[in-house]
Length: 263
Image 1: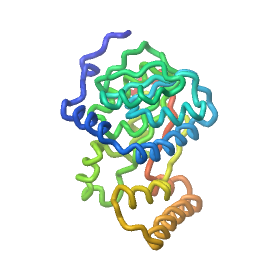
Image 2: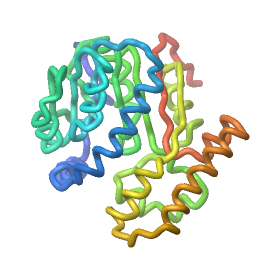
Image 3: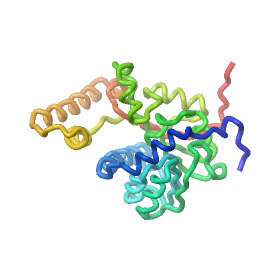
């Protein structure tokens, strides 16, 4: 494996690792599986029928997404790396068919040879990463393609919601444009993309289970109505409106040999 540069020798802060260890020890299985089902479907959709035999998920959490992908027959073999020991144990305990390796890693250095994977998946990870470009360079080194999904936190009122985002560990915020720019400047070419809204099913679970609000017909109608209105506006006004209203953005990229000139 190629020698790592000093910049690639970064590692995650101790407090970050501790936070995620504790998170997966206390995590809500039903909530994570619900979210993972939609994230896995976004991966399948943006892949658009392409065949990927050997897949690596970076920041695989507790293996929820891998489980759905394996159940759908998305790839032949799967590999996973995760910064949290409790997350690694959760993945192993699932005994997911096709999973060949589950490894603890330091958040940046991947112990694989160049071009080891047909596809690297990074789903709702980049917003948590302290040195995002360092990780992207490692992904580019080990994979031929990548699928990345991020939440779209940057919108009106974002300044007032900093504590809210930090409570979820979101230290980077993106728009579709800012993610595309980041990827382009790191030598990735976007082959396909999609935007998505939080489904009414997920919103209801979050409202009634997580937030413990009383169930009501009015709340149900409001949740369904808001989703329908945003969906309709996106269809009527096109891509830019979809991107403005969306809650998540998913891209399929391939690496290029292009070296972006700086100065």
